[in-house]
Length: 164
Image (tube, rainbow, N blue to C red; front, top):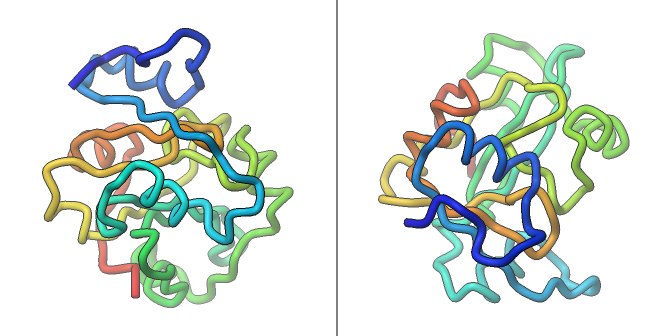
């Protein structure tokens, strides 16, 4: 895998974080359709990748603390499981504006990597079954492919069955 984005001008805080960590990754760009029903589904289809390997980054509020859940785009985030994974009691999806302010990314382009304010993160344990996974590179129409172990390490994440 390459360490640098394929085309100039694609650098994002996520790709900079990957470059600084010197881990193997590949950037994949596609033409984002503003009318797409699902950002993650659009990415999987546009890149010709099984939806089970493309992960979405969702920000939830667990007992008043913003928390990131990274789950396959083919499924949903189980909020109860996310709360349990971090020792919390209640979880709800975070206000989109709060998620954007905290991460520094726009909705549909939130990456678990290179966030403005790193949040506690849980990656669905299904990611570990794949040699590489795709997550947002920090912009709609831009995905980064990397080893799930590198994703977990670089985000300081734990893994748990948080998808359904």
